[in-house]
Image (cartoon, rainbow, N blue to C red):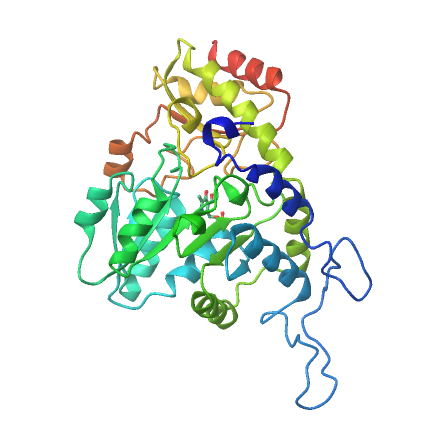
Length: 385
Ligand SMILES: Cc1ncc(COP(=O)(O)O)c(C=O)c1O
């Protein structure tokens, strides 16, 4: 839908839609099952000493998870993909590729849980972190130290929805032998494929758009090269937070409808962003589709945030909503409203939150697939009190 503005003009959206729905369809050659069977087993019988069916133990490899991982590697154009029990487990796995003493640069407008992981947990193991505005390549360059090993960015960022040029950061990193890691949760491979722009690793909270139904937790890491894929595989098997067979199947099922969900969510988001931006109670709307044109993505996505003129109003707005649910998370078919200041970003340092505008006026909206008019009417009712 937004391809004319955002797309690469090669109709990749359509190609992706086909690839998404076909995920896993030809995986089960034994029976031809179109829906990948759920191999609900911890272990696998060996035919004889020294022989294996190709599967030994589910932490190391499970057919249902493998079907999912192969589909995701294909969608992102990676050498390998790995499914974890949550997005945080996926991010943790990537952090375990680094060593004590390494320094990593993070985009400062990022999911609060990543701050928590780095500042409260991994700091104890000697990983050093700087947070910068990755939309400004000069700021990234200024943060580089001799011991810097990687740059982690979210684009669009969360919750301020600012866009970083992945290719520019990746080219910068390549020259200096730094890893470029993109959290692509908000876009999914349907709209944006960071490896095509030079990134080395992509991570997802698959809890969000990939799963799409607010009914499972999952995380994905996609690696660009065989070497990186081997490194992530070692961490996945060595630490063990793998995605369970049943959840792997749920995620495969969610993937199949990603294109139609995302198209509808994005269309609703574009209309709501425009409508919100002319409401007298609204100070500012943050949505990539309003003012930014970026060839790296096939669309602006379905996340927006907005700040209210009256700081006291946020809590009343939340309480007056009847369709949009006040809950953490994003990307599912049901619209969710989040108060980042109190919820997802509560653990971001106060000074950073203030500077970025993550304050008590800011609300984040994950737009679902409900009818647009119902969503608009719900917000209109909530804003007029
Ligand atoms: C952009 C982003 N990355 C990672 C995560 C963590 O994922 P999970 O909640 O699946 O552990 C989240 C969760 O909200 C997120 O929004």
